[in-house]
Length: 250
Image (tube, rainbow, N blue to C red; front, side, top):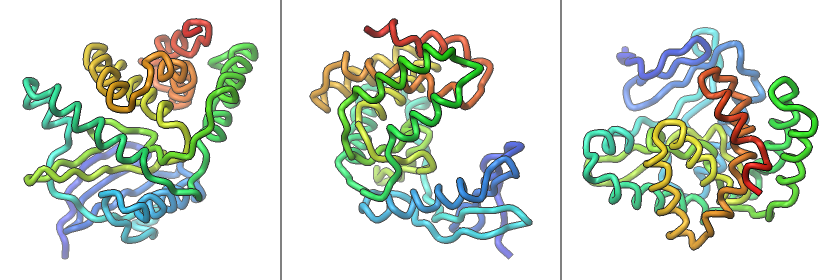
């Protein structure tokens, strides 16, 4: 019998290693449709040839819907960054190169980011007033339409670095197709919620390597901040509401 090693345990989700596989078990707060869509996203991204864990199955384990993927040996890039702060500039270059490699891919059957963002913002009736939601919807519709593969939660904790330096990208549950600067805006937001200096380093590197104006990425910040509000994390609410104010980024 294969030994199970718990990786993450939350009320609504449990992830554990079993032999050479990783099993993600979902709680009752997840709909069957969302779980199957996550597996479908993973399969569609896998077809692009990016280095990601292989999808091995979708099943019911211990009465709960579960997704099984290949186990990738290594450490997260976040762990490498934390253990080697003097290497942060070099590691950030590598991090951005990986993100831009993702953006070079195409997966025409992935859901469109703009559709997802519009749904998320429409749901924020308690967090944002009608005027705020209208301004955000208007900004979304005014942004250029692209069809790049987007990770949707691209951060160093979702990258596994193997001993030989090979990197694998994990967790494709939020994958969509759309504008790469929106994906960069979300990554910048995630860094900013932890450390503004590292966030600024990231944005400088991304804009240089993508040959993109910093102001262009910043136009997405109110939109991605509003989308983050749908996670309903009390410790983030105040700062996200401020960021979601479109007029702050005119």
